[in-house]
Length: 128
View 1 (spheres, helix red, strand yellow):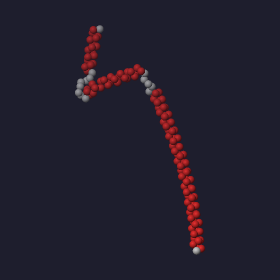
View 2 (cartoon, one colour):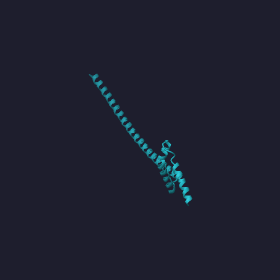
View 3 (tube, rainbow, N blue to C red):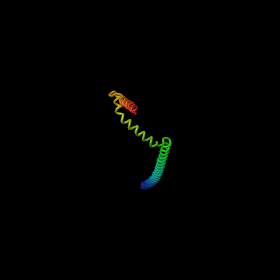
View 4 (spheres, rainbow, N blue to C red):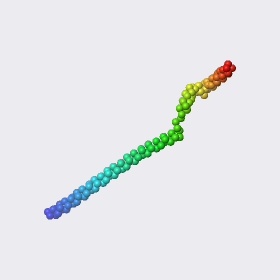
């Protein structure tokens, strides 16, 4: 009976040691998990700060690019803008005529117009 009692005491002590080790390991795991959360939060803060910095730098670069563009290519004078607008309107007006000519479906688009203009100029000079 004493041997069973001694064995029970040994097993009880061993159980206490195991429970103690388990508690110690659980505490270490909690500490480690807390450290990981703290490190992750720190990394997240670092990433957010870097992201904000990068956005700010990108905005500064875009503003500098706009500034350089206006220095390199200043806005044209209103007369130039007007001429350009009229030029492109003229181009759009004559595209269909040139398209037919280039496709071989029509004669040279200005042959008749230029000839008529020349005749009108000559007639005006003769009358004048």
